[in-house]
Image (cartoon, rainbow, N blue to C red; front, side, top):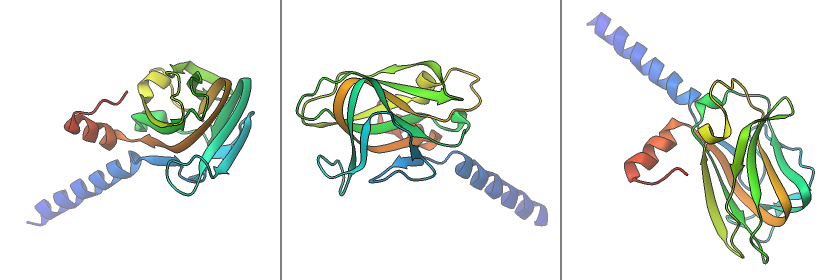
Length: 177
């Protein structure tokens, strides 16, 4: 009986470690959180009051050609995450062309993801697989860069998801791209 209880305790411990190491990580929810910093080289307001996706704030961005929204974090292992998710709003002009890019040591890793043109005056959810941002074997990233080709837009609800998110979407029959 003691051996069975010890094994059950070991399994519970391993499951707890697994859940911790694969947790989702919030990047922006009305402010930058969890050690993420704004290192953008565009005009950025991280407490924008209009438009907002969820009260009270979003990130407003006014970018000239090849300026970027850049969220920096201490380097981390991207293999523990499956997706990056964010909400974007094209404002009154819409049609902005953006690229999502992972960064390490100041250099792009992989070719990034070209995003579809943003809608006018409406929020759209972007959900990109981490595998399309980070090449196989890339041990660390500092993340995340959104390159704008002249844009005025708003961003909200940025999060990177662990495997539980992908598993849930698969069970619900929802695409992760």
